[in-house]
Image 1 (cartoon, rainbow, N blue to C red):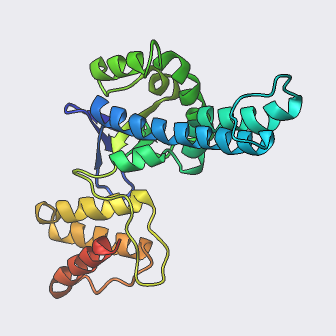
Image 2: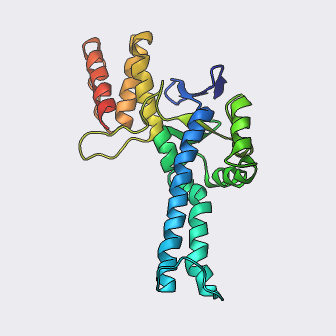
Image 3: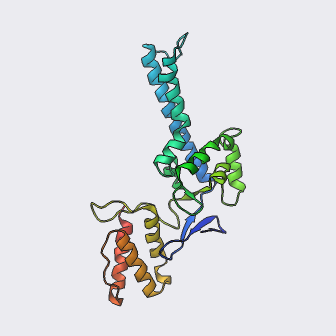
Length: 243
């Protein structure tokens, strides 16, 4: 694995093709943050409003004059949890993504291009306290703008970075034949990368790589003789076009 000069991550693959993952900049980060911020604010506020109305039994959102423990347990704490735990919980459940990141077309990966573990995601989120200073991730955006791979402090501490789901690589999700399961992100990227480099690769090498990827996708590759090479490419293109 190595970083590209133009803010990209080059990941070594087991098929011999290096997959380029374009690194997302401050603009994509800000866009994802704005969407996620509104989402967690709406979730937290919706919980508070609904539960406060039910708790009070009237059209009032104010805390009771002498609020009991149940007020905090039922109304206040869940609302705060929805707001503050939004990122760490969703990034773990969605394997390095959130609704905002999905909308911005980005995802979190490790420096080797793999999906981050729970520990790395938690460290990354703990550092949000620093990156959010003074307001609205001001420090995080400044650091991301000037750092080499557009990293905020949380990424530096966790060994992660934000890359585009689409761009020179391809969409992250490709489906097999009807009724089959979805390809994993890494295999999907390899399929698109092989198609992108098809004409620049030697005939035998690209046919061998194509057969490996088709088998990995659960498909039966055609014979790899000269007459079947175009058919291999057609199989890969059909695989890539299934969303």
